[in-house]
Length: 419
Length: 179
Image (tube, rainbow over all chains, first blue to last red):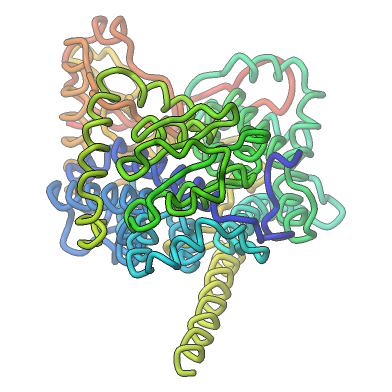
C-alpha cells in the first residue's frame, strides 16, 4: 500500500477527498501555530532592530500590539474559513498575505521560516481551489442546481475522469525543492573532489558542538553518545545529503516517495534528539497532506453498504446527501428517492418516508431521521469516533429535535435555498 | 464561446503563476538571499571551523551572580538570535541603541523572573512546539539570584573538538555590562 502519494507522478484521483483532508489539516495546524505564537511580544522590542533589518520595508511606521493582534486574529479566522471551505475566494489571499506579513515582522527577531510552507500551500490551494468539492462554497453553489440534476448526481456512478489535484502536486514539488536547496548549500561548499566534505564525521561533530554551544546551550544524551562513537556520524551525514538532494529527484522522476517521507521524518527526529532543533512537528503535519486518505476511507468502509431513502423533492436533503456521496470511495452508498421505492421491493413500504430519511444497513435494519444521519457518518470509518458523541443522549436529544425541525420545514428551507 | 476562451486564459494564468512561483523560489535559493516570502533555505551549509568567536548575554544581580539570559524572557527570540544581540553590546555602533536594548532585556528578564517565582507562566492554550529547545531558568537558579540589575555581554572564543570525548574550551575575550 502506498502511504504517501507522489502527486507529480499521478495527480488524478477518483475524488478530491485527499485535497479536502489536506486543506483541513494544514489550515487547522496553521491556525494553531499562529494563534499560540507570541507575535504580540514583537511590539515591545526596540524598533531599531526591525528598522536596521534588510526586510524593514515590511514594517512601516513601527508595530503596535493592537495591529499585530488584529492581524493574528484575521489570519486565524481566514485559516478556519478555508478549513471549512467558506468564502475561499477572499479568505485565501487575505490569509496568505497577512501570514506572510506577520512572518516577516517576526523574521528580524527570530529568523523563523516555518510559516512559509503554510503560505505556499495557500497559494497553490487558492490557484486550484475549484477542484475541491468538499467545501461549504461548493455546497452553496449546489443551491443553483435543480431537483432533477441533484437526483441524477446522487444516483449516477462517479465520473470516470476523476479529479486532478494540482495543488497537492505543486505543493509536493515545493517541499521537495526546499529540501533540495537545503542539501544544495551543503554540497556546493566543497570542491568537486570533496563532494561529501560536508558529511565527514569531523564536520558532523563540529556541527553538533557548534549547535550545543551556540543554539541550545546543552548537550543532548544522544550527542554525548556520538562523541564517543564517531563512526555513527558517517551514515548521519551522508544520509542527510542523500535525503535532502534525492527527495525532489524521486518526485520529479515519478518514483515512490513513501520511503523518502519516512526517512525524512527519521532525519528530523535525529536532528531533534542530537541537536534539540525541532522541525519534526511542522514537517510531520505537512507530510499528512500526501497520505491517500481516499484509500484509507475505501479500505475501512470496504464491504459495507447502505441504502438511503430520501425525499426526492427536497433540495436541501439532496444537497446534504451529495456530500456523503462525494466522500464515498467504494460506491457502497446507494440513494433511493422515496418516489421510486416501488423499484426496491425488498425495502419496507409502510414506513413514514414523507416524514424522515431512512437508512438501511446490510442487515436490513432501518435507521430513521437523525439516527440515519448517524449511520451515514458511521459508514465512514475514520469518522466513527464522532458517532459515539452523536449518539450520546444529550447530543442525540438535541440532534433529534433539530432533525425534526428541519424535516418539518424542509420545503421552506429548500425554497429559501438555505446555506 | 467567450466563456470557454476566458476559461482558457485563466488556465494559462494558473500555469504562469506556478512558473513564476518556482522561478522565484529557485532564484532566491541560488542567490542565497531572502526575497520574501521566498527563502534560500540554507541550513548548516558551511564546513564548521574548529574555532568560533561568539557573543554571550547574561543577567546579573546586585551581588554579581550571573545567569545566561533565558530566551523565554523575551519571546519570540530563540537562543541563536540572543547571541547575535550580544554583539550590539560589545561592539556598539550606537550607544543609544545599546541602552534601549539593555533596558528592554533587563525589564523582560525581571518580569519573567517574577512570573517564574510566582509559579507561572500559565497558559490557557497548548502552544505549538518551538523550533529550538534551549535551556531555561529553573526555580533553583532564580532563588539563588536576586532581582537582575545588569545585562552582561561577553565576546568569547571557543575551541571546538572535531573528535574525542571532550567538549569545547571557552575563553572570554572581552566583556561589557549595562548599566
